[in-house]
Picture 1: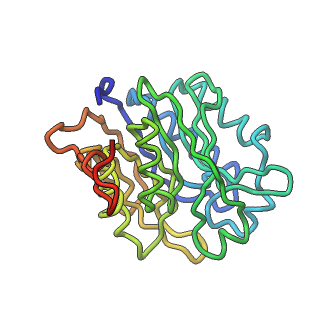
Picture 2: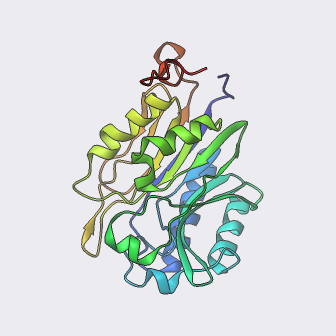
Picture 3: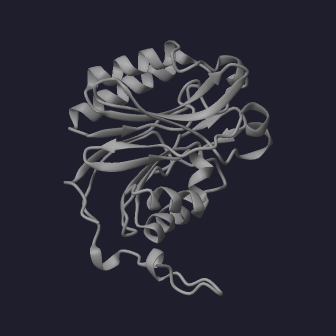
Length: 263
């Protein structure tokens, strides 16, 4: 697959807003300012940036897509003039979704994805699972969205790759002790399915959770282009075309009992 020119990515690893919409918006505005100054094409923020992943009243705080959170976020993205992806608690009537939004440089909503793989009993109590994938154009690339636990499931990554996505943006809230996800799982998913993965996590503690940090950009050839440590961080990285010699051929080579090679 021929890819577009290098993509400059800004990866934002802040502390969680812990229920404060003002804090969340401040984090977004600050991160976008850094991304703009660095000449980034896209900035990616963690899961449930609005209102914070572990806020005790996240369901009560959730807002519809035409609410103040999204309006303020779209204004901030338009001002920065680059693409942005972030998580939010999205209300639709009585239902609440753990969603990821992609906002275009002109402030329009490019895609909304609702987390399919809810993690643990708390998320299952709060959120309704999504049931569809979402893709959008990102500077000549077809980009997909997943949220946190979703990216640990190979069928979801494979489905986006089969749909033509060559980069997946993943807002996340991965906590201790699951450091293997950023260190092993995300790069493995990237190389196995031939897609770049941008994984944006939190730093620090929120309530009874301590986040792992270790946000990263993994290229489609398995190369880790950039990785944060455990603390608050902002990474800027250029994502080059992957090395063709390292690209997986699994999708073509797969054999299944009784079915042989795929067409």
